[in-house]
Image 1 (cartoon, rainbow, N blue to C red):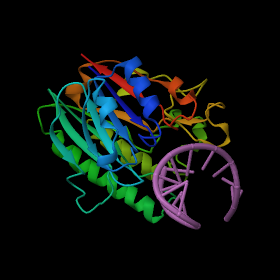
Image 2 (image 1 turned 30 degrees about the vertical axis):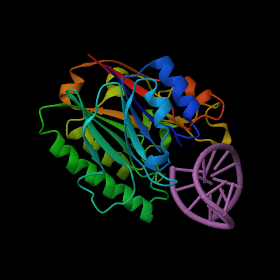
Image 3 (image 1 turned 90 degrees about the vertical axis):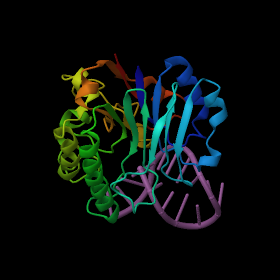
Image 4 (image 1 turned 120 degrees about the vertical axis):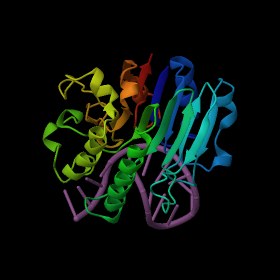
Amino acid sequence: MKIATWNVNSVKARLEHLLDWLKSEAPDVVLLQETKCVDEAFPRDPIEDLGYNIAVYGQKSYNGVAILSKTPLEDVVMGLPTLTDDPQARYIEALIGTVRVASIYVPNGGEIDSDKFNHKMRFYEALRRHAENLLTLDEALVWGGDYNVAPYPWDMHDPALSGQDRILCSVREQEALRNLFQLGLGDGLRLLYPHTSSQGQGLFSWWDYRQGSFERHKGFRIDHLLLSSLACDRLTSGGIDTQVRGWQRASDHAPVWITLS
DNA sequence: ATGGTAGCAAAGCTA
């Protein structure tokens, strides 16, 4: 079972890339973020033609998450149950066979200590509370998405950025994400590649559009697949489709994937 | 501190 997460930065602008990638990589489950369209405008038909069931939770212009699955989706949850007063579409969850999955788009956070930053911290606190509930279930759980945090120095092109008061890198953001690790959610890619550091091209999932970041290998690993222990037991492989970031008019994120036995 | 690029949507906001 191959499960991927990808922040597409507009599903309509990225539709051809998405379809080409679905055909070549044939994931069983895809967790999408930043679809940036209302549910009625989601391009369901060409995706369904490739054999996928679809659950969407969108909004106009910003945010928006979706789950694609070759097998049926059950128990769809839209929005974090622990953050019911948030109008932004950043969380969708579903049960697929024996695996519960979610597509998560954590707020970027803007400037450190801004209102947006506080929203990011509240979102992480809500994630932590919801994870505590989900981890009591006797299910494999795969929590994928754009977490907008590089958790360790080796998750960024310049390890010296780690812990600085910069968005994606600050101590408070890293602690918020590591809180989820400490609950028992494993970092799928890091479990598979414990020694891949920022040497060479590193293990990155996002490169800023500006200043030729991709060509200069100035990336960050901020897209993650978090796995409960029952999912970790089934983890067999994983990777990042870095080549997709090099396509013409690409998303600024590359797809991240794992396979479960 | 600013601006570098991209998407939405129609000027500025978000990232």
